[in-house]
Amino acid sequence: MDTAARPNPDRIVKLADAGALIAAIPSLLGFHPANSFLVVSLKGGIISHTVRVDLPPPELHAAVVGRVMRPVRQVHAEHAVVLVVCADRDPGHRDLVRRAVAAMTTAGMSVLHALWTPAAVGGAPWRCYLHDHCEGEVPDPAETECAAAMTLAGLVTFESRDELARILEPPDADRMIRLSGLLDVTSRSDRTPSAEHLSVVRAAVESGVLPATDEEFVRLALAVSDHRVRDACLGFILDAATNAAAEKLWLELARCLPPPERAEAASLLAASAYLRGDGALANVALEQARNSQPDHNLAGLLQGAIDYGMPLAQLHQSFTDAAIDAHIDITTEPAEVADEPDAPADGPADPATQPAGQMDGPGDPAEQPVGTAEESSGTTKGSGG
Image (cartoon, rainbow, N blue to C red; front, side, top):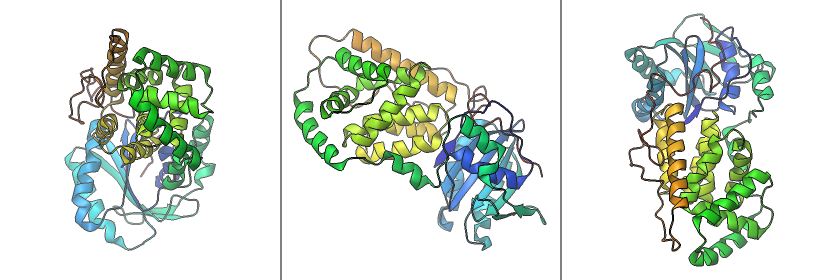
């Protein structure tokens, strides 16, 4: 499941009708969806949250609607638009649409449209399941005001989710093999204090220079594999002065490091991407983390927080608490450092409420829903009837 709450552009972007909303979807998600079921939530006429899943088989319709509704409820939206993107014109997806509309109506939401289109591209037809004679043609997404606003904000829209995922592919397979061998040897004997490990990461972030040599990659891999250091690195994500450089570093490490070390970098990349509103990149990074280390604690907790629609303010506070606790532990660590288990600082295992570290920070969902106007694509005006 992909969720999107992309940062708002500097101006309000008005969407005239359902076709304009469909054209905005690639900009909101960060990629052009295919064979997808989407729910766009609106509050006060502002798009607050976009959720996308692969189109499920009929036997999974009920389960998928239930899954999609978890984050949708957290937004406390007033209205919603349902969208099926599928080349097949057969109305076989009516059952999925019917179940989704019923669930949203039960939750107190008004469904403005339930739309179908073969693709979110210019010239594609669209029609509405709910209203007769409600149909039209999708304008060119690249020519929309929404696309221009996202481009000005420095956001990239990929042609597909697969293209987005390819940015995490290893650029040098031979280097990854070498690093795997080096890390197998050095990780067994490494007794570097956590404070020194953290200094290595801090120097890389503050310099803005990406690692170039095997030695630099190994030092950074050992550093972020120290789980107190990894949790302390959440502080770089939360700091406006370092978050951009830190995310570039996490991306480079996630691309170049071998499993299982790449799981640490991919989890940090996911946390950074999600907090700035790029749910698609966050989910792709989490998939890589779980593939590299299936039982990775932080990746699992963050995935649960995303799937359950934890409010961004609460997630931000949770990361703040985890980073502070990690810094305290690092500062007070004894000279002899014992091996640490793979867990952020004292975090309970319930993903719905405890995503990372010491997760007891404030965060009333009614006060700070995921994708508020300040943190999402929510400056986009909802479509009319």
